[in-house]
Image 1 (cartoon, rainbow, N blue to C red):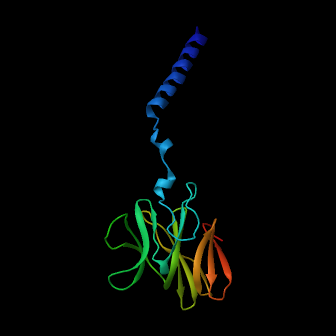
Image 2: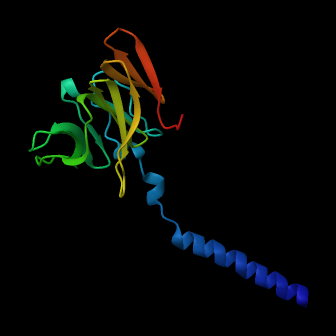
Image 3: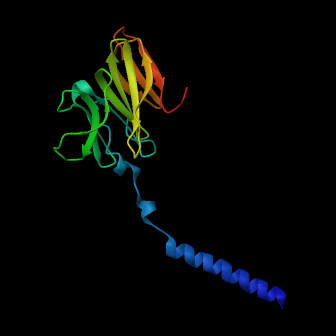
Length: 177
């Protein structure tokens, strides 16, 4: 009899969990398409925006922007004349909301896994700033170097910098090296 009660309790437990799992199942997660969150790469020849690893390249000289997470990200001039990296709601004509002040003369920016890397030239060379657009997101200097950068691109997990000297330099993204 004790075995029968234990089996009945086990059966109720298993069926209860199955019923609860069916009731709490959210099928919206199955249809979520990461590509809908990242609207793509707006540069002429940057990396493809993939559903698995959201990415994009935007060159300042071309006026490129990146659309992601319902926002348009860009490098712009603020009302007080500073060069900023900011965002606005997609389709809005409002001025971008500042995320950070660009350290020097902007070259462009890339997005890799929703982290933005802004490349600029300073008096001493180049500066790569990074920021994750989120509550409490803080901009930081990611890398610096003594080369003047003329172009940027994205190759997998590497930021590719083309220097004024004609050499190509790579900066690994996402690590703490």
